[in-house]
Length: 361
Image (cartoon, rainbow, N blue to C red; front, side):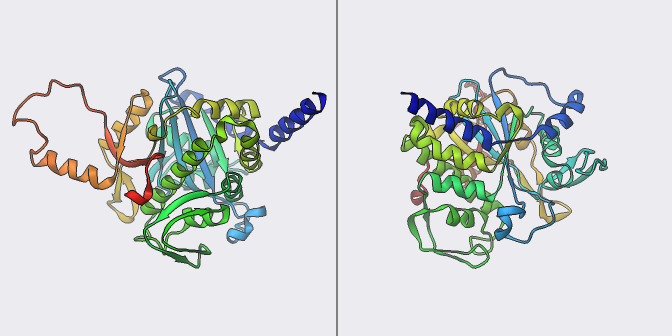
């Protein structure tokens, strides 16, 4: 009994010590508390997930070391419903044109407010600047944040013994060091990292398709962890948490193993079909087609739903386009001029869920 308790305590302290606490961002955000949104729904959680593209340290193998400068290669706003019956992950394109507030840099200088690409916020002012940019854009209070690098992502995939995906076409991408046949297959961590980062060899090479691929992969990862009972089995959960925490930087509210476990426990009963992924409604920026801009009222409606902890629905892009065409042509099943007596429908967006089978799409 004493040996078991000792091992358990050692494991707990090891995992607890893995996590890096981002106290600097918290201090910076505190200075701007008056401008931050007020939480609307008690117990709902909004967590900003940031994938750092830093090439420093162990990440140097994935590209040139840029001397410490880094950008947010991937940013996802994760909304956990107050009843923990749904989770909505919203990708924010790195090339989205947004208002970035004046932020404090690493060398304690102040930047000017500017209208530029979203991922510049992380490069200019780190996590705090990114959070303030997202809060200004969405009106949603960010409760917690997590920053993970390439190695953290790769190690998590290996910790669950790989993740199954389905490819409609083979991949041969020299830049991503990735060569995969078509069909179902299980990717290890290195292959998974190449898969979610690849652009040139897949589809039209756009960042839009890259984000969709990231969302589908994360859905498959969630499905793997739930279907294999990883979240319910401490023995199987330990290597996943060990891998995740080694390359994880969080706010103090998630900087202990207990806090992270409470978060995981809150998600383990969410049905996979209610773990939804989508991208903020956007279109090519009018002044530069290589950039994006928000589409209204779609983006505003999405942010309002999340802010008020109300549901959103996602369907494949082709289904959404067909429904919109039917509505425009009057084939939505309602008589012309008829007033609707039904409740306001749930806003629907193009996206996917963790329950989707990629081979059947």
